Image 1 (cartoon, helix red, strand yellow):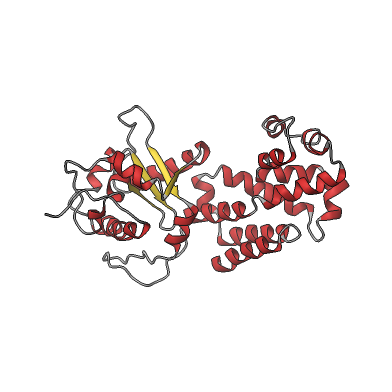
Image 2: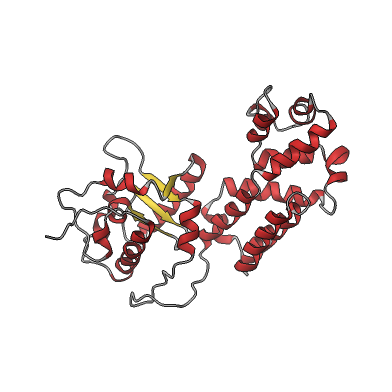
Length: 308
């Protein structure tokens, strides 16, 4: 007897399920899935495709071949457990933006986001881990108007730009804060954190979130991209302009603005963000990282060239 409740066991198991879901979105399935969109508690966002897929559909292998069903023995909690290996929960700021995208996605099918889970919690939204996102980028998911998979290159969807910028910023860690710590420690080995970070930062919110005392390694781990850029700007004239040969202060201000947008994307900004905007941002990131880590700079330039 065929096992209808077998859970996915590896990342390869996800591919036929996603392809089947794409065909359902394209062709319909007599309401078996789409009619239930407002009932699902957890959704998985696939930036490679710009779609959301419910956990109970994605977690069971049978949905790669058979119609969706809600049979006894198929539990959303079990599906969620196995999918935790491949997907991460998102932070609050990003969740708000992804929830707006989910609302738009469901709205195309005349559905709304479920008001809350059985536990009274908000609907959950997860995104692929970096490893799985890279894996998905190697898969041809393209679907033609009749639902057949094609080999055509799909145009980058607006929501994908969100992830390209985030991916490039992630490449800067941990090298950027480590570089800053090393430079400032040269200036004052014992008191660099207080002297060049805490006392120099004019942004009270950033300063408030940083430790006032501790050890050098702990300090560096607390510097995120935004705080790192602000520290460089605050110490540019006396220190970093002499160290970062070829880097312009205007680039750093530009990166800080891009980083702020990356943390607070809106649907309007995502849709208005042109390919030229992304190319310029990636080019600035690469140029900025050259004196810090040439290898990281080249990786960012590679993302830019691939995007072109």
